[in-house]
Amino acid sequence: MARPENPELTVGIDIGGTSVRASVVDPQGRLLDTLRTATPPTSDSLEHCLHRLVAELQDRWAVGAVGVAIAGFLTPDRQVVRFAPHLAWREAPVPAILTERLGIPVFAEHDGNAAAVAELHFGAAAGGHNSLVLSIGTGIGAGMIMDGRIYRGSFGVAPEFGHLTVVPDGRPCSCGKRGCWERYCSGTALVDTVLELLASHHYPRSALAAESESDPGSLTGRRVAAAAADGDPAALAAYGDLARWLGYGLGMIADVFDPDLVVLAGGVGAASGLFLDDAREHYAAAITGSGHRSLARIRGTQLGESAGVIGAAQVARQGLAARAAGSQ
Image (tube, rainbow, N blue to C red):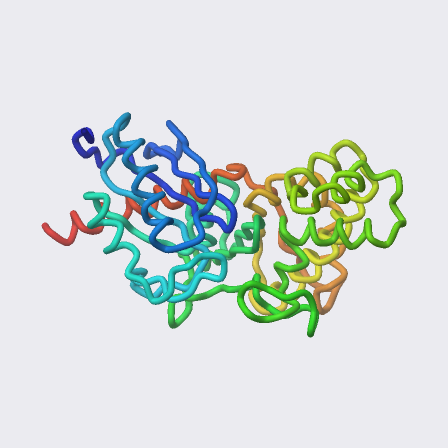
């Protein structure tokens, strides 16, 4: 049986393209309990999965609400998931569906915005004025903070930087386009780049070569990161390529948004020590007027891969507070 609701504790859920993570989070942004599982392929199986995870956490904790970070387009009121490249929801009233299923209030947020909320309140973006939080994982999520507030655009979908075309007719993307930025700068992109490098036969001493030959599907971004940390030449070359694309993309964003701070979050962002210095150099060279303008500070996340769940939990807490204020 679920325990009595406690608005001080909320559950944050980060739904990625490959995994779902659910955590109980306190008002200081501390993780108290975490569950993780693979992302189911259908909307019904995903909703069942979320129900199971929250029910298990409710058996151990009294929580007041759930926040869900989703990689996709939400309506401005965040009541409907219109499209999610890596998920099955289409024009789905996800918060209402999950609220009915879970029995406690559920609030939805774009995953990039959720990470930005977390970094703004508890992490590396706390001192920024106009900041960009870039969540690099299976794909790229982004959150823009303008004058200390999350910027959503006119229709609730800003910013969708991961699907800017950087290579016309390039690698196919799950969004339906080709050559998107996230196809060259993400955990998925790392794997694709390694496979391309190994196919060139220029890296015969790479430990990843035998692994990819026996089971190409077993290669993951985490494995590439571990190999790079061990000095594997193909993995290091793939990170060099990622750094180049990251700097190139940040240069484009800086020409439009001109942020004073960029925070790299997500699974790949958490490994920023492998590529951050190179990315800074590529970024400085890519912006218009290089050498004659101020550059944004680029930091790794202070929250690691937890930014999404912490931000989602904070969104739920803010949602409860707004409802309470509206009822007074």
